[in-house]
Length: 181
Image (cartoon, rainbow, N blue to C red; front, side, top):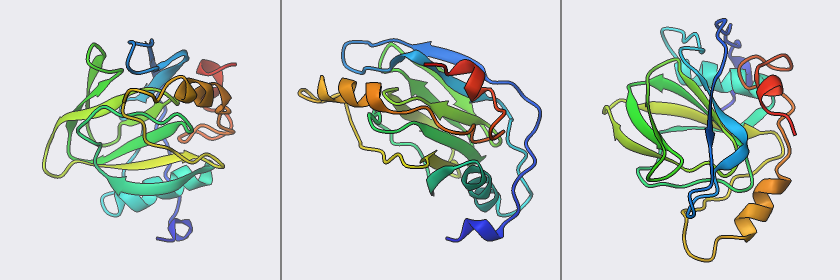
């Protein structure tokens, strides 16, 4: 899919809510970088919403865009941060593992998950879809909390650089204020 041919979205003026998730013994989560939640931050067009969100992410140097749901089992990425832009339907997600935070998402919501944060879909409408992406130069692995993943995953997480831009606002987004090394 060549998303560069579609115009970028005009982002709404919302600030990010933050959720800091600590290591639960199985999932490392990230005690330095909070999850960022932009409730209704994406202004979705009436058609081709997934292409428009992918174009916005690409414009702000978040690449490898895909369109799907969220896995129904807890997983995390130790080698990349992840942006999830909800383009249709609704879902109930859990962040941080079994004792983590539950969050409802709907079209226009954007979540930015720092490397290490476990996430899973608990329930979803039949039309639920997100556009996912990763900062340029980062490639996600897939970790599930299996025995033996750590401490290697912990070392990977510590080495993941901060993204150059916020996937919604670019160089001036809240990610730069909320994520500092």
